[in-house]
Image 1 (spheres, rainbow, N blue to C red):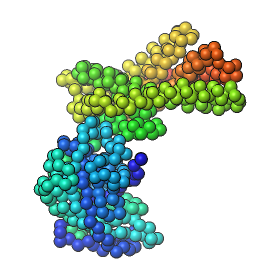
Image 2: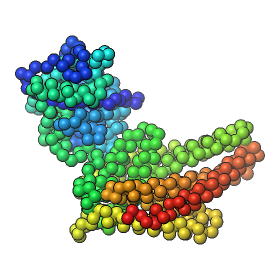
Image 3: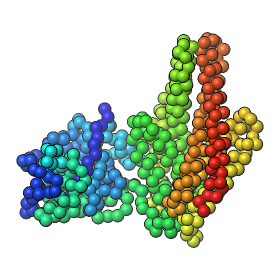
Image 4: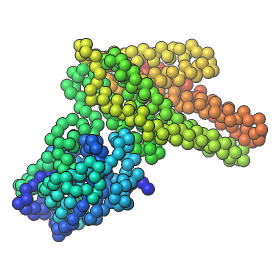
Length: 531
């Protein structure tokens, strides 16, 4: 069963025991408040022995009592929310209560990329006496809830389950203002009133963080950094060193890989494509800027990224091919031959997709994949930069773009000289790969060179996309040729496959003509690079 999910937008405040909840109908936009409702909530929080989830601002709990009993998974805050001055926006997933000590697979799938094979167990038990005050607008819309929480937290020793004995208790009081149907504009006037009543911005991002104290790693809202793996800012802007530019670019792609991991496991549309694109971007950046780093760790990481890209490519390429052929089969006049050809294509390509996805799922459960994620984050957090003088980002990125553009020009010339047929088709595929690399390198340059670099990236992307269509047609044509070689095939089915092959040839010709036209238009831009 798939977990249900929603977006939680809230702000937390620390408050003393003696503080009184103010008259909330004094908040601008609030017309009235509902009668306070009190409930006792009991929750057991799960994490690894090293508190991996807490360090990434992820909380996994099983709660009983109240209106939302069940398993809850709160993922890292979206964007930069969750500081002392901003509301925290988090995606929250729910699953039914089930068994007390068995985390539902529908939630575990969303954190496997963070757990990396580690087991989860109970770490904290919380009892919360919650009094909820509902805030309503003039039109009766339920804008938000203020939760007045009196919390008792108990640490659970390693190896102890839900029936574990005391591990030291803490008690505190906090307020949480969470939006229901209201907008973020409600936070500022509400905060002014709450602060007057004695509230102060919470020192921790969650109750779990407070219960764990210093062992929660990056959970404190007073700390800097990006414990959830989100993209760091580019310090010094346009004057940033080249290694910092690469780090920021690679960090964004690591964040994308982690974000897409659950979707790949759940076979959600576009997840494989998006993860594969992030992998390719990192490979391009590491190749273009490899001289900035110690050779061995970067070479190893590039090899492992190539492996992951190939594993992702199996089901993705089959998916693209199947979508393409289904579309073309739909363009042919309905007949028994077309139906037979369609069945054969579905068996052949659909089987390749299924096999590729099984292989991919095995890879995502492997230690090799988890080690790669570790290596990527280690590169992000402590890049193996050579000890020589630090190179300027603007200069190095311009050189990298220029080098990639020269590489693209050489591959284009090779394609024009290549003999028609397989040699020419392979040469155009190389042009496509070089255009893709130029696009990615120009994206890194855009961090310090702005609009001009983005134009180069866009021009390279256009060439890449057109030649991608050309390559897809080549693959489809060759597959159809292999399928059609069956000498026992009925004539109507063979005719349908021949018609499909003809469509691929027409699309190849159209794509190549379009590529030449687009290349002519962008030739001067790509020759000048980002300077």
